[in-house]
Image 1 (cartoon, one colour):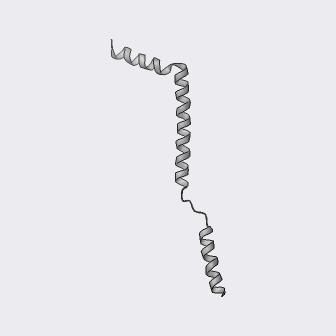
Image 2 (cartoon, one colour):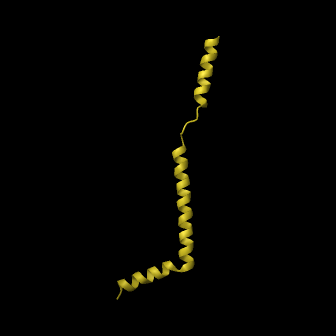
Image 3 (tube, one colour):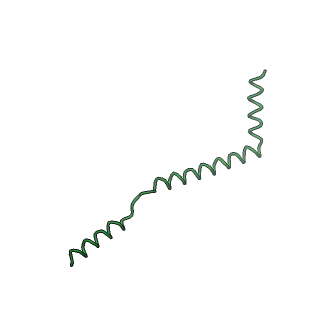
Length: 65
């Protein structure tokens, strides 16, 4: 009887050990969210300051004399 209980305990204990499965996926998702937030902030800044328009006009002025 104690042998059966020991096997049950070992089986339950082995399954209760936390693993790192999915940790990489979670880290990747958080990095992607942070990158999207930074890109959004840069886009908002560029739109408000008309930096994209000035850059485009600068490139066109240099390309077309």
